[in-house]
Length: 262
Length: 268
Image (cartoon, rainbow over all chains, first blue to last red):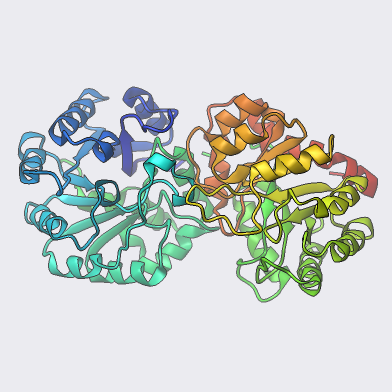
């Protein structure tokens, strides 16, 4: 087991289409700790489906504060730029909840990645030094329930946005379901873009991804409790990684984004 | 995360399609390098490269030859399943005789050439059953409606099973949409499920064990297209006791293969 993992892709709340083992925050905390995780960046499943984003983010912040020592789970609130007055949700994430980042879900909120309000939101977040986690995909399109269908996002428009949004730190969640190597490589070259590994597939996938984007852009991510946490942990064993590479993926890259408190 | 005292892991579902290497033997070596890292004792391999969804009789033979070549250096670590097609029944029967009856293979693989509810496949199933070969049928139930014309669903496999009572069958991928796949095959005790080749969605294996019983659930990866890690996690990470995990990771497959291995004098 690798000590001290920072998991950049964790979720609180109930997935509406099935109960997931570990979908109670306290239970999930135990599972993460047993897997060697020491910090989790947490978003809310509710944020994918609810309109009252203020309440969703407030609950998320409160749940994170209440767990463990209050430092284990870092809340990433969600802003939906298609909702009226989304600007105030962004303000509250930063000012009221002191969040370090936000988690956006375009496929669930119904906008493409060249939507003007999305572009505006990402620029503002970058100006305010908020990390932007962007959910590209969670559930395989081929298995989504009839009433829970979401489209596959075209990531190509992000390339120009990343080049233009000064100071943007972008973390792509679930980028590998429908990934094309050239888009991923171009995104990595465009700016400070990170990729977490929950949907990374293929034998020795991490070795291959390091060739595509370099090891300093890869973050540990489990998508727990949607996926078994072991999946991401075992990927660290499957690929032949040097000790330093393992440290970078497990925590050092994440600590560049959110430094350890002194 | 993978316990040191790992049980004997047998992987039902591997290919030599995309590992690194110019020859089947080199590709097999690459596959086994990763299998070793994940402490997998044995793998089942089927189909060659490049994949052919509508293989001609000649192509079936070529792909089976590639697998035979791969096995030639790895007979102590790998089992081969003979690639057959419902579109070419006579040719498939000859391949079963060549590769299973007279060769080292221990199972058959039906992919996406023809839906398996078609009675024209029956001679293939009967021949495989006579030889006690493991019968593996790919299934997917794509909720986006993108099933290929010859791609079987778990419902198709149930129809096939009803025509061949008592013959053990494996539902490849559990139909992908596993909650539906598990429910579909549940009444047919002769059908076991393959966990391979879908996302490591939390709760999959727990539901399978609850609804089917642990003895009908078999670990497979679909490597190298899938990661060994993500697929092992479905068992290693499940809320199940160690004995159940051991059954799924290898015990059930060993039990299913026991008759043909005994017939071939293979000790494992």
